Length: 121
Image (cartoon, rainbow, N blue to C red; front, side, top):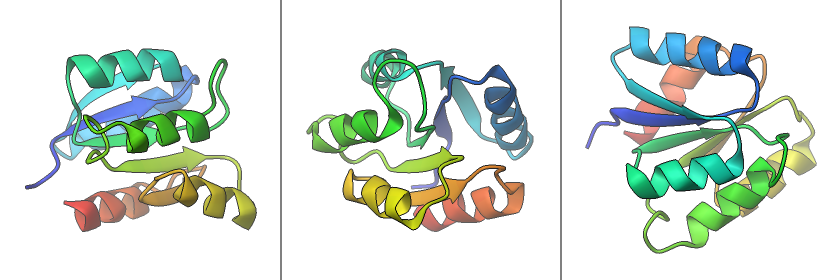
């Protein structure tokens, strides 16, 4: 099943706009959340087919939210791609251990992002 509905979770309005712009221009339906708690509410209300997750946010960080999503039977089938400025290999490994399917370092390359989404779909 091709991915259509994507949830972007990022506390930066600039980053949300940037990612939304790329995805909408490529035919995706996008919703956004400003923090992890907001994301969990939106996921339950209208389950996305993919989540792009920032790590550094107020409240719970992206690693904690990714873990919550991947351990919940209702949401564990939704792939998460972490999109963060944390560029250490240890962060990448930790993110994947929390249940993320992939890990991208900001600034996000639009072609790389679209290729990762295509690989999941």
